[in-house]
Image (tube, rainbow, N blue to C red; front, side):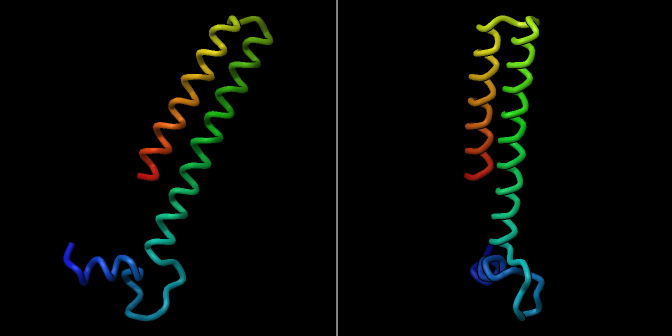
Length: 84
């Protein structure tokens, strides 16, 4: 991108030079917020399902802890990729 395009992106392209309701920077923040929340909820759901399976005797305690560690690791990697 050239300097003018970078400025338009920072100010919110497509507004015709006027004030925008949603700038591109704010849109990026919203996408990161929604994505981070979705990843966090998926990890919480996965941990709860593992705990319920452990409580019902379908998996062992070691399997539950492995699922928890894998899901938290996945959360960290996905959040890093989303925010970077």
